[in-house]
Length: 463
View 1 (tube, rainbow, N blue to C red):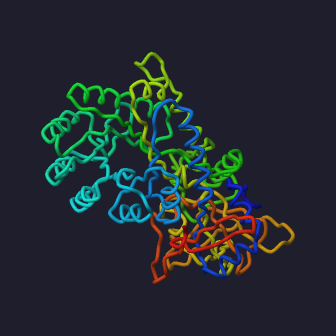
View 2: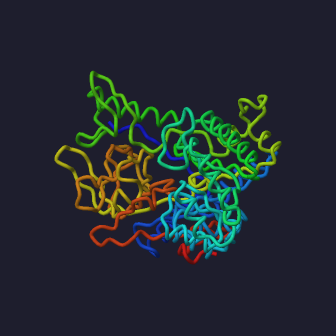
View 3: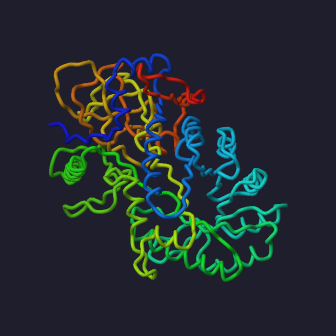
């Protein structure tokens, strides 16, 4: 019996490309396998959807593309041409943004920074999103002109502890540093980033940040920016009910109450005991069905406690505050896929069918997370015969199962068949790509849909 299917949500441009098997094969023939394919047109569509939400709000705003989600030059150039900002987190990303055409006033540098990165940010004259008091003091020591800074805050009531940011209790010390160096530090505003999908948690953080901004004005500063960070979700599954059905079948198999869909003794983070499964699985957030644009619209429309029930967007507008956000996953959502080829198929000693690919697990997901959207096998047309298989990687490591759970395929794959991993554009391609055994880094190729078909070029060549 084959497992339930977990179909991927595909952007129409990506779906059209995958429906053109000749175009997919041409990409593999020209650039080799495996291959990361990026779609700037999808990136632009995602950006447009977020921009439309912000345009309907009364407050000023700026989107800063979070470069760290993907190293793609095509993505960062697309962002530069769109006129938005960019959020960089390393010296290499800073150089990439400048090379793409971003001017310093459109670049924000975030994350924890050592002394070399602080020096690079000051030299480039970009906005610095300050992570801690040490960093703020180093900027004051090293700058010879006023550096625009945002204070990243943390320690919000009701939120999980974070290793990032300046705790709310230490804001006074930050203000003291700013006051001592008015010629070297300019307080542009405050910022936060929460690893949550909860609108209410973000609303509480906004309220705390507004209190800090009021304190800043009382100290003589004139902040004008509230940066709410990123964390907007992606939509992976085309069928939320199918996702739930697979998860239910997977847990039943772990309990021995149905066919086993897992490999070996793996439990995907579930705790199995007493005839029940508990805990949080180590899947990416595949179950989300709400678009990033809808999540942002919900936040801007949410009533803000202590402000007469007015919406977040209206309060920011009334206080002449600009809203900054740093979406990465949201603008790369469905804008990238990874394609490999089947090398061979074998039967394992436990009776499972292994489909070996010419990539490793780390090429398409972080090693501790499971791919829970079905890869697409682009077989030659033939009679459908659904079956369950495990996709195996090319490394000589037992853990290099690309899927550690059984995947439904329409028919048994054959050597040479292309296998597509959907929606790998945000983090999946670059977070922990493996090149052990001297395997080369998987190249990136841009796919552009035109009236004459699909055009392909190397990521660095895209203009």
